[in-house]
Figure 1 (cartoon, rainbow, N blue to C red):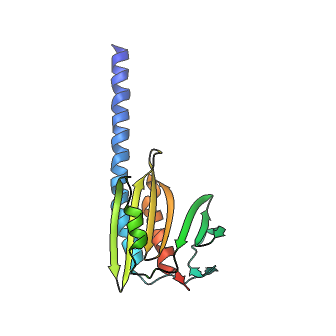
Figure 2: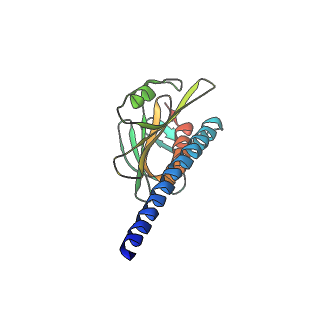
Figure 3: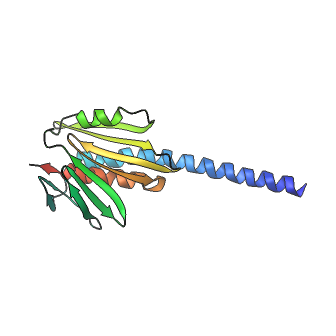
Length: 170
């Protein structure tokens, strides 16, 4: 009898834990959209980095790890972020966005923003690793991407949009 009760208790705790994790991504989804939209709508941060033909705002605690043509690898506490830009695309271009959403992977978030001839987007997909998500924020021909744990999704959405919003391609 004790064994059955213990098994039931463990199963109940497991189900509650799984339910709590599910609610967490739902909460992060709405926060991520809100944070990305605020960053998209506000005045851009002042660019403090210039690499190749792009100037952009690099937040405190981040560094440039590597750069290749049209790609800049950023790092924050050993966590990589990728900044990609296409100098042939304007801020109102939807080309990168259309390529991004043309996938068989289910989109957790597919949110677009428009303002003052700018087209922005936030796309989040679930990665095979449990509780890990690919977060991409972009404006026109510039996008930034990272992999995020569920508890970092909204924070990363804001960070990525801040970087992209500040980007100026020459």
